[in-house]
Image (cartoon, rainbow, N blue to C red; front, side):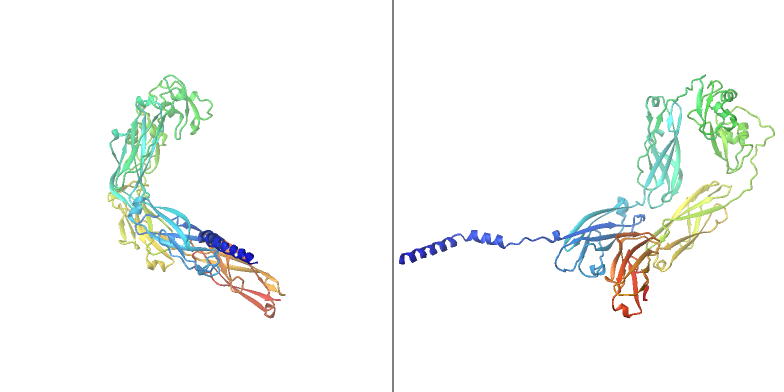
Length: 626
C-alpha cells in the first residue's frame, strides 16, 4: 500500500514538472485562444465625395471667386457607438455645417445622409496665365477618407489671340491661279488688346515675313476680331503636288503669338477639258448668267446660248444648274473655272459706273445694263469680270449716282456677359457695338459711349481715328463691379448712348441685370380632406418648386411637419437639381389616432428646405372630422 502511494506521488510530481517545463507553448496558445477578431473603422465606414462648381460662369478676372460645392455622402456606417461625426475636406479650404443640422438632426452621420460643404477660391494672375485652376479634394469622416476628386476649372487668360484661316478657292488646277487667304484674329482673352498693329506670319506668303493685319491702331475687345487677306499664286511646282499648305500665326497687342492655323488647298483635275476648242460642262454659280459664263471661258455667247436648248428661258438659269460652253477659248482667254465670272461691289459715296468698272476690269456699259442703271450708296451691284474693252453702249442711260438723301445716324447695341448677379464684387462685362446706320461715312473720329453707372460716365469706344462706312461698326467693353448696395436691390439698370463722327447721339439702350434669387415654395394637398374613424390614413402630397432665378442643387430637399412622424423627411432624390420653375414631389401619410377622434380637426404645418435656398413659406393644411 505504501508503494502505491509512493508511485502516485511520483506521477504527480512528474506531471507538475512537465507542465512547468513548457510555459511558452501554453501561453501562446492561450493568447491565440483569447484574441478576438476586430475590424478597423475603414472597414465599417464608406464615404463618397463629389465636387461641383458653376460651369456657366466665365473665370477671367484676378480676384474673381470660384465657389466649390463639396457633397459628402455617407454610404455605409456600421459603427456601434454614437461618436459625433466631424467632416473635414482637404484641398481648397471648405466650410461644413454640423451633421446635426441635416436629416434626423443627430450627431451620427447615417447611411444615405448627405452633407453639403462649400469652399471659395480667389483667382490669381498665375491662374489666368496657366489657363486653369485644379482642386484636388478628399473628404474625411470618422477619420476615414473618401475617394479623391480632381476638379479642373478652365480660366481665360488676360491676353490671348486665336487665329483662323480660310482659303478661296480651296482647290487649284493651273499655274498662275490666285488663292486668297482670309485671316481672322480673335481676342480670346479677357482684356482689351491694343490699340496696336496686329501681324500675321505665314510661311507661304511674303517669303515668310510678317505682314500687317488691320489698321496700325486697332483695338480688339474680348471675343472681337480683326480680319485681313493676302494672296498666293500657284506655281508650276505646286502642280506636281496634291496640296498646297500654309502655316500661319498671329501676334500683336502684347499677347503671346496665337496657335498655328492653316487652310490647305487641294489640286483638282477638271472633268471637263478647258483646252481651246473643247466643249465643257459648267456648274452655274450664284449671280452668273449665260452670256457672262461664255465670256469667262473665252467662248462665243450666242453659240453658248444655242448649245443649251434644254433651258426654256436662258435668262432664268440658277445656281447649281449644269450648262454647256462650246469651243472654249475661241473668243478670248479662259478664266474659269476656278475663278468666278461675277463679283459684287458695295457702292460708296463718290462711286460712278466708270470708277467701279475700272476697279474690277469690267465694261462700264455692261455693268450699267446688268444693274438696271441703278447705282445707290450702300447697295451692292453685280460686276461682270473680264469684260473690259467690250465698249457696250447704253443708249439714254445716266452714268450718275442716283440721288439719295444723305443721312448720318448711329445705333448702339449692348450685350452683358451675364443677365444676373449673385454677390458683391462680381464683375459684369458689357459689350458695346456702335453701328453706322446712316448712308454717309463717319469719321475718322473718336466714338464714345455714355452711361451714368460707369466711372467715368463717358468712355472711348474703338480707336481714336475710327472710320465707319455705312453699315460698319466698332465695339468696346466695360466692366461693372457689383456693390453691396446693388445686393439690396432687385436689379441694376444701365442706360447707354453712343456718339461720334458728327452723327446725332444714338437712341438710348436700356440693359437690365437682375439679382439672382434663390427661392423655393411649397404646396400641399391631402387625400382625403376629412376623417371619420381611428386608424384611417391621410395621404399628403408635397410639391417643392424652384420659384427663384438660379438653379438649385444637386441637393437633398426635405420637408418638415411636426405633426408627422418622422417630422423631417426627404423629398426627392439625394441629388435633385431644380432649374428655375422646376419641381420635385414626395408623399407622406398620417394615421388618425383615438385622440384625434376627440378633436374637430387636425392642423398640419409644413415647410421645405434644400438647395441652398432659404426655407419655404409655411403651408397650413387642415383635415376635418366628419
